[in-house]
Amino acid sequence: MHAYDTAGDDTNPTRRVIVPAGRGSAVDVRRGQTLRVVNTSGTQVVDLWAHTRDEPGEYLGLSQCREVLQRIHFRPGDTLSTNRYRACLTVVDDTSGIDHDTLIAPCRTEMYLNVGLPGTHRSCTANHAQALPRWPSADPPQPWNLFMTAEVVPGGRIVYGRPPFRPGMYVELRAEMDLVLVVSSCPDDHYPTNGGDGSPRDFEILVDP
Ligand SMILES: [Zn+2]
Image (cartoon, rainbow, N blue to C red; front, side, top):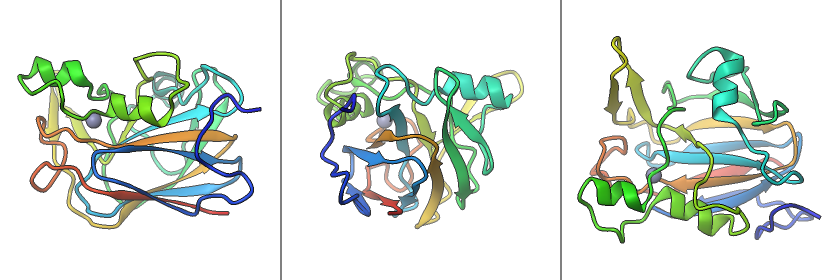
């Protein structure tokens, strides 16, 4: 019995998941499996969460990772831990050259309203809720914002930047426990973090058998 239900099938693992532009998806991965988050367009920010399969309320803990690693950016070779300090994911490879943001909250309806955009704007928070309907809160954990540049410069100011436009760049991760990954093609067109014209793009997840 798993804490979360997804569309995944344990006996026939999904090998390739296309996440549509501006949408989210939940992907089952088992301990030992390797997965790639492929930035097909080279412009798309991907919000990533990892929830443990068997322990409700245990998930990839960004603040715990920053504490343990003593860095705000994660690199190949780093083991990422849950909010309960269990090894969760290992960063295997990263072809992007980006210091993926670990600080900025996932976009949500109220954020768009706060900057004068319509409350009907799609959001990563809503994508998380739709992908993982059993998550018991309207507030998801802090995501790892893959391919998102939010550089902290001297003085503590945050400078947003666009992805470097490398179509096909990817981050490869190994699951250290059974997980449900939730990913979102961030639809944010307010901050300059998505490249191109700012409109969301498809990306894909490849999961080793
Ligand atoms: Zn977003």
